[in-house]
Length: 459
Image: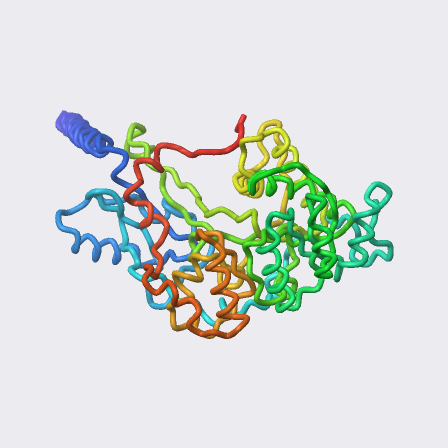
């Protein structure tokens, strides 16, 4: 009958439409997935996602010549955990286009947003510690007996009793070859009001000099030569301090203290680390998309999180069981992996999760403000020139980005300890300002996307 014929014709028509759509879709997917992998990367800043995604995409696309293929919705790029926000009037979305012509949504902010007054206030906020889990102390803060476990560490306990303030010390590992630099470090510390400093002397010549200077020390003669070999010893030494209940600010001596750092630590975490980052994203982490075109349009993009390294030359370990586990893991790795850099191992163990038969330290960790616990890139690229920072005084500056270090440290010392306002201008010929890490890396994307490099056996 006519009704049956009509239904049959409608069904055939729908099948034909579906076949045509499937063919068109497959052609489109093949075109998409055939593009070279090094031409596209999505980057989403960790805190600057707004609801203006489509406006930004439209605006940027209009400026970039030929129309681009649409990108996955922002909800697939980043799981939003906090309300959208706009920082200093700049678009909060940062989906960065890199490579040689393939477009990713968004715009590159030409200028990194300036620091806010709140960010430049280095005094820890009590509100920041609300909700933090209780720390598992080796010695409870209210315990009357301290230090503990001194039966096998009597020499260390003796010097800690004499030196520690509030059960904390600042520690550096040195030998007599670095007396000139160590002298400047001690002088800056004394100007900053640091009284609880202690040197781990790894040769027999340094203690006499330290006695003359009135600086406490713990003698641990060690034949290690070279800065990396010496630095690799720090974890086993810090483990000894933690085991008796003494918290440690571990410091290299290419660090200039401008204020007493113990007044600016939050002390709500097992470990507080200084970052090599120079803006919020590089310091605290950002999201980006890894791209494998061979998996097709829906499988090719996968989110990843990246963060710059915490620097093993300046960090604080609270005397907790989690910190002690971290030091034990790192000391073991330094002993059994002679070619692993302590910086690489530190970054891996602070961030990597437990996996297979490998247990993690289980840390509560905090990244210290890069405005307050500053690296030399932040100082010489930003603090030197940004008006908002003209009167800012960091807590400490680590000369980790520059060689030779001594002239930079001398300039920092003059600028803030001697109040010579133009002390940093010796490098006025250098470039200033910073760009987001994805922009910095865009010419090397093909190398970065090829894989990740680790200093340890990941199995």
